[in-house]
Image (cartoon, rainbow, N blue to C red; front, top):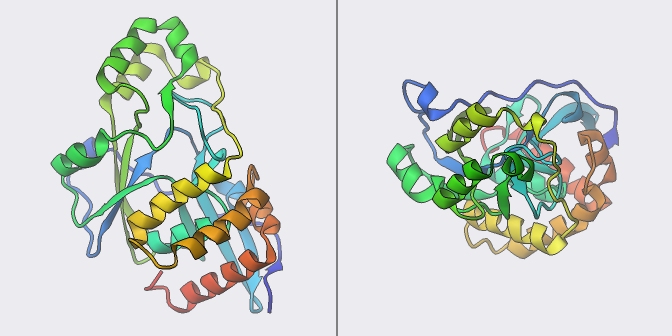
Amino acid sequence: MGLIWVGHSSGLGYVKIPNFYEIEEMPRCSSVFVVEEKIDGKTFEGSSSCTVFRVRDRDYEICIYGEYMGITHLIFYRNLPNDLIVFDVRVDGRYLKPQYKLLLSIIIGLPHVPVKGVIDRIDEKIIEKYYLYEKSFFKTDLNPEICKRHPKLCEEFRDIYGEDFSEGVVVKCYEDGEIRSVKYVKPEFDRIIDTVGRYEEYPNRNIVNFDLDFAVELQRNNIKKIFGESTQQELLLELFREAYPATYMKRTAEEIIRSLPEKNRKLLELTIEKCINNPKAC
């Protein structure tokens, strides 16, 4: 029986991720932590992010969480493959583990945030040495409207970080359908906000282009980091190539699911069914 559309649901808000200096002890994990690039956008959550559909005569809720990247905040992105970049997926109230949330982002044709690596424990020195100061996967600069009014501030920031810097990283553990996480944001970003105010005072738009090759490159990077040198890599990327044109620039989870090619919808159904039947695996 195929996937049957039954409408959308309000869903739950996304989990709050604390800064590492706001917590007394680091999250613990019996498996591994995944390290992802923190991108500077607005969290996509609420009724637009969740939808309800039926698999084998039962209704399930799927929520797609990500960053809406159309509007420039402090970081100006010049080569985004979509204005919605996925960082988590929740099915029937459970957040999917890295392998499965990446798999769903591939099936539904939405780029996943750049994965930096996988580690077995959180150590501030390790994060700082290997991940915090890595370049962004995207081409970045500071909001040009801020730099027009505060050129010296921008010049000093570029002297420290150069070009194509990231905002920071998010480190997550997935256990029992929940997320334990902490984020590391470069302290200069807080200093800029304290000095110049919030991004709403400096309206600008990021550059979002339909670029299949770049979107595939991003997902290829993520597959290698999560799955290793998977023999299924090209098959997964072919699924993404099929769905990306259909779901590009869609605004809600409802639109995204409705737009999927038939093959991808069937694979989405099978994946959700597998996760419902074996939640510990997902």
